[in-house]
Structure formats: structure tokens, C-alpha cells
Image (cartoon, rainbow, N blue to C red):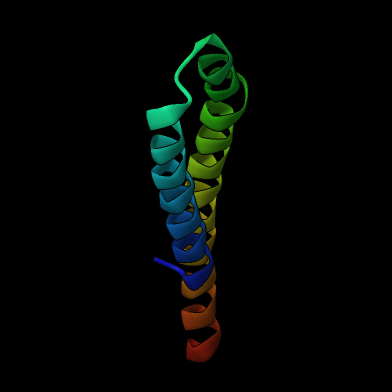
Amino acid sequence: MSAQSGRLTHALRHLREKWDIATETWNDPASRDFERTHIIPMEQTAKHAIIGMEKLSEILAKLRAQCKED
């Protein structure tokens, strides 16, 4: 895992932990709407970004290795 994707993964985990704590006391239709319209899309976007960052990291590592061979 790259440092950047690791930081994003950590931030995403932290967001989910804090949100879970918040919903212990804020559990009504407004909180569920907030989760549906903000939290879940943010989590999905972050997960896609992490996957992209990992793929890019792999490609860059291969390119660096190839450059060292030449």
C-alpha cells in the first residue's frame, strides 16, 4: 500500500468510526438522509480513489524498475 492510499484508508476508517459514534445519539430520518447523501458517496469515492492510487503505484514501480534496467 502506498503512503498516500494508506493515509486515505486511515482517514476513511476514522470517518466511519466517528460517524458510527454520532449515530448512537443522532439516529433519525435526517441522520439517515445525511448518511445516504454524504457519507456513503464519500466512502465509495474514496474507495475508488484508493484502488486507483494502488494501480498507479504499481505502474510507477514497474516504470522505475524498467528505467533502472536501461
